[in-house]
Length: 189
Image (cartoon, rainbow, N blue to C red; front, side):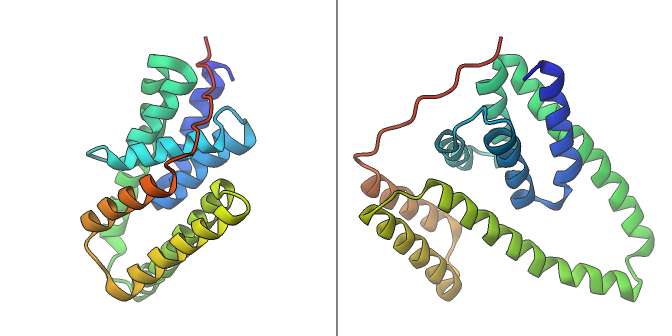
């Protein structure tokens, strides 16, 4: 992938990612794991997990990590600017436009319908990522059981995110204690 292709890819992600986190995560995975398999799925998932630990906006951290892995230090700038500039401009334009039409009944109904769509997209993306990274055999049963337990717990208890995050780290550490990390791709010149 040339630098210009890399920039075009990130601008494409930035233009399409106005819908939020799940959409952006899906676009990144599709661009760098599926379409142009530059990043192995396991590495992508490790970068996503690391970005969730970082303070600030997790998708910007993920973009920076992917940019660094693919194109070195300049890849960080390309990834972050390519993703943020278009989506920021579109968001500003949409916010100004929404201010003019927000009291219309049709707009209120459209906004009310966005919640279920966002939940469906988040669950769909989660399932795709789990299917791609779940282990095989008996260990897959543990992975799917853990995923099901977390979803059920989240629905029933609606817990605070920090304790869930800490518990997830502990469970993941125990379940993945013997796993080997995959070899990362080399950055492009």
